[in-house]
Amino acid sequence: MSFFKQPIWPRFLPTHWVVACATVGPVGRMRKAPGTWGSVAGLLYFTTLFAGRLGDVGIVLLSAVGFYFSVALCGEAEFRLGERDPGKIVLDEFVAMPLCFLGWTRFAGVVPNWAVFLAGFAVFRLYDIAKPFGIKKLQDLPGGWGVTVDDTAAALATCATLHLAFYAWVRWGG
Image 1 (tube, rainbow, N blue to C red):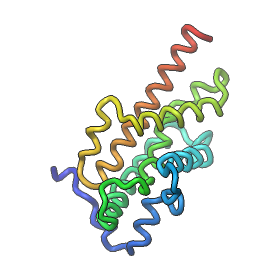
Image 2: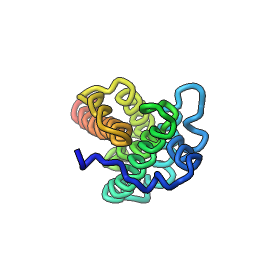
Image 3: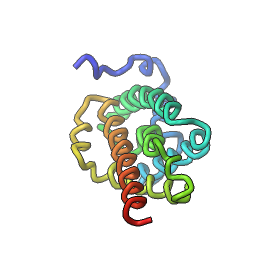
Image 4: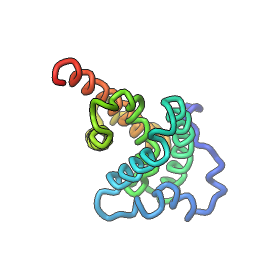
């Protein structure tokens, strides 16, 4: 499983930096539902930096960079905290959220943007918590891979669900 090795560069960072990045600052330290707050932060990240500025290719490229940093920092934070995928680590939700909205501009003019974003957020949280479609098994990957890949899969499943729902709406409901 050499493909799933942890990057070594975070080992040289101070613990407080690693943990602060993995918890997205104070977001992961919220007492109630830190994963939900991490997803809210990810939605804000998407709507302020991605939506209307980047096409799908840009979203995928920046998400790939975020994915790499999430694997590295979340894996190192797990090690330093001595816990397996603790709830306070929310960088994985944060970087996965933009993937929920690949192709979202196809909905423009038919569905209000706020409704797309709200639906994407809700479906992502459902899939991130319930972990259907084999997503739960992805958590078994080692280190930061297991922390990050399941959220990425939940985001891509959310994207597919939004597109299927939009197609059904246009085809039969609208």
